[in-house]
Length: 253
Image 1 (cartoon, one colour):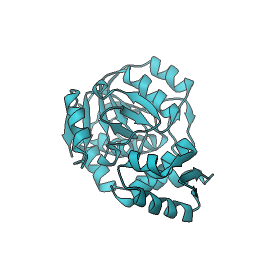
Image 2 (cartoon, one colour):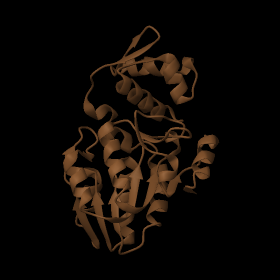
Image 3 (tube, rainbow, N blue to C red):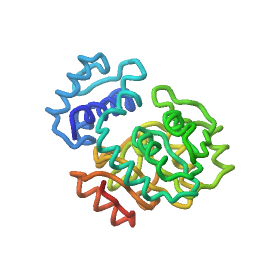
Image 4 (cartoon, rainbow, N blue to C red):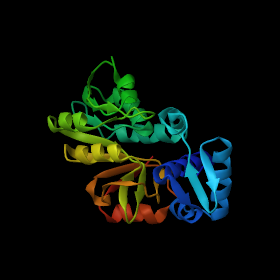
């Protein structure tokens, strides 16, 4: 896993737990405690965490530090390949529900070539990419914009989802683990994804390989509850094998 991605995951884990041990971080990241110590030193130098005996505690920080804008440029080429491959699964004339996230924002750009489409979005970034595009009927679902991520969450979002049915839900994910399934770092985001899974004929997950082997705070679904995964070539072959055993069609971009 590239250093910038590992630092992002480490920061998310610390903020999720508020206080976390070196041993737990090492287990969840699949690295040595020595590596965790170095990463925590770097995050402390940036003023994002505080090192304590045996671990780290979260510090308040500007919301954009670990948000969408910071992550959008990371692995941009990989996300672009994943997005292009996922867009090919969409047929002109379909109704699409597009999740929030940096990879799904890239999918939004690729969907323009598949028009005409009706696309409902759970992300203000995706909405910006699709607004005023020829052949795209854009529906922005209501809800609360989550700070830093600009994902749309909450009861208003769920209520609007209840009024619609989609051919395909394109879902981003924070983590996927061979035993724990698909999970997210934020409860509100996880709740929207759980609801969206019930509103589409099929679900396509888009996720780069840094998400493999990671367990996040809030479970979204078991592995077999989605139909297709589009990813790059993961080093974590065990998780990939578990996903395939669960009956998920896996496409490598």
